[in-house]
Length: 256
Image (cartoon, rainbow, N blue to C red):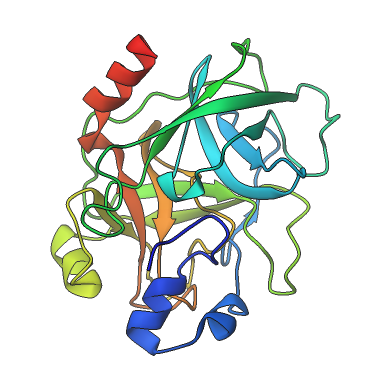
């Protein structure tokens, strides 16, 4: 089965680990777990992706004046991309922009093997000017180190099924490659890394897909997947390991 933006984040691993059904998993708690409101515009690279009917469905990250990175499983035919937003209801928020995009390029090896290489680039129809509320972030060239503290942000769904009014932030620790592989066998791939899973239950969840995990002031990864019930101690979530894709990202941006 394939993860899509419409499928609740983490559904398939809930199925594999817990044997739950789609309907049960979709009612699992969904948000940045144990996080807090971000300081307004402290994550100026954060993008919100809206569908044609103006429904928020995924996040993204501004990495170039014309390009946004997101998870490949968030693919749509077209997007409205919100930049400079603190509130999802703030399309008229001072310093924000709503831009159209009709071209997105999934990584050619996405889902080969299943769930691997979960990234895509979205080309905005026009370049955006950087400001105090909108700024790009460099992609990490170094791979994450276990124990690194990283910040994840997103508008993942609340327990009542609604979206939070404000962008949420949470700090997570990177988990060792060995632990990540052990916990996510047989779907683990080198295009992934794990973070979270501590006793504080801090985590990402459905609605956070495609959003940034920032380590050492660079974009280390994108929210990709996890198991059905978010925020379980001992069960970190999975992020696309962007240090593996710097050449592909640069090539697409330079030739696109």
